[in-house]
Length: 372
Image (tube, rainbow, N blue to C red; front, side, top):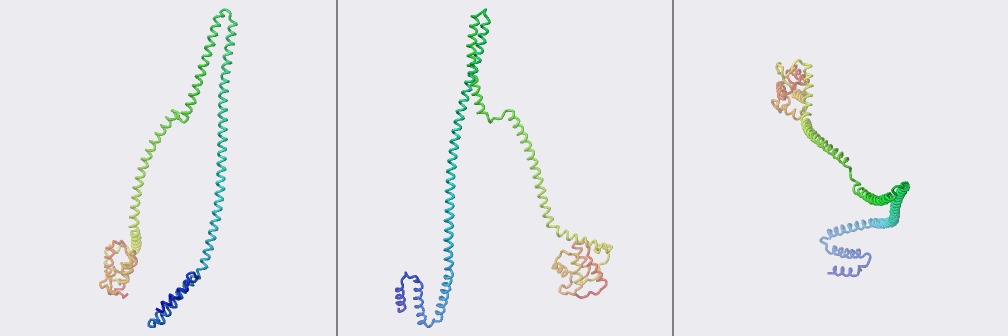
């Protein structure tokens, strides 16, 4: 109760607004815990060790905090520097965006001015075209009137020359003049209709292909389609043949990869042994009628097997030697050469190696096998 009252009293004296409020508060609890350890003598060593460990941990953490303070300030400075750079970059981008917007507005104004200028130019062109068409019509009318006056002058000249039938000729001249005027009007109407029809035909059929060109293109298209079908058929046939050959090639490659190493090495070893034996001996030792007698030591038998079967591992050679021995546990056991010939005959070997000949010669010269 005294400790609790002391702790509460000390905590009340500490203000939470002080800068080292947490440290002062921890000091109060540290003092109370020290008094408790002094009074509680039974577990004083254990409690002291616990308090010491906590004190060490707090000191280590405070050291770490003090070491991180410069990093925190540096981080704050770097953050502020980055913020300033971002603000400057943003201001530059805003200025660039504003300049681009102003340039865009200026370009839009220029485009509008050019459009207005184009419209004014188009209006001038239309006006000039209309004036040109009116002038053309005036010139055409003037030409027609001039030709009519020339015809009238010619008629009057012919009428003054002819004096026999003046009344009839005047009547016929008046009739010809009226007919010419009517014909001229009809011709003008027909010309206007023909021009309108021509303009309409040009507007409607400006992208139409002539019939002659259409027939030529259609015939060429049919020929190309027939040729495409033929080529497609040939391509499909060649593709099927290529796929078949590819499958056969893959199958052959897989079989060759599976059987070729063993077969090639076996054939090479057998062919080398056969050529060497045929060069040194007149007959095949397996198929010859010579008696296969004599004994070999275990080492000589193993050497002969390793020469005859170069592809077999040491473990397989040892198994063959163990199966050929009468007593597998005896390392000095003598093995008959007939056993070696029988193993070679069962394995299908066509020839023996030079080591086998030397082993047989050693066995024949030394009837008593030596120990390993």
